[in-house]
Image (cartoon, rainbow, N blue to C red; front, side, top):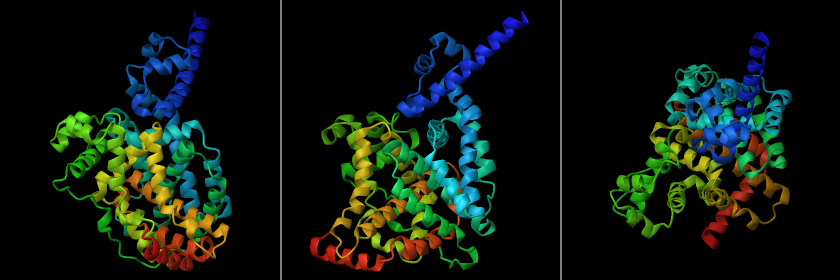
Length: 413
């Protein structure tokens, strides 16, 4: 009898490992909202009944996956960011980028589960201790937090976006090489040498209530429904009720939910900093600090959740993915027109734009996970990063800005 028990125990352990591996694959393949016990069991080589004998429902599976596999990956991600922020050196910053280069499927699944957990109560209950113990371990006002924690938290947001983007769109080693050097100089800046900036929220980042135009009302309704429930559960009927119109009225304007969400996304991204002609202000002293402060503000909660859910859905929708990439392309559209600038400088300008987009989106995403982002001192990251870019990243930045201004006048960008 003991031998039989050991055999069953070994089989159970093997089945658990197979299920968890299959669950990670399914999260990456279809997204958290579409994971099913039937598909996970099939991929694990188990019968439907065997999978249900182990887990009552998908939520229980996700809880087990977080506690047994993903939580440790989240801790490892956070600690590598904090080590780089607390003890910046070529070794610690290099370890951060080595982690990014060697990212596993479990790491990508960890990012998706962490960012989705807020709207799955049973899962959020299990994820919350990680949030409290790590992301909120310095939870007081910004002036009571260490500069290294403020930098590390910002870096963690940037890292999870980098991992997600690499998995969705592919990795760019040349970009990461440039970014590694910029971040090393950023993190090595003595906090005492950082000029204070009075943080404020740019007005153009706040979503204002719509007027009487139906398209604007639909965009506003879509922000709220997708942001609260996720793309999958945001039905046309729910959006129609929120906009006080019929589903038919929506279909007269948009052929599908994808098209409606893309239109809302474009409407949301018309913020001033996302316009190529105005991006030149981003390296003025204080501008990046204001940008990140606004991205984290509670006043932008609707923007944060909608942006996050649209990005998560884009990992499984080519049409949404193209729309998101198109927004970054709009920012970069002026670069090929610059003259008397080397190709290397143009590449670095591409990388600069991408890095600022990634850190801003990282702050946006992480703000849906923890309110500690609202009181983070972003200037401790933003000002040293600005200096690093102007010194080594794009040293002819001012000349580029002058050319962009001329292009604005002549070509109307």
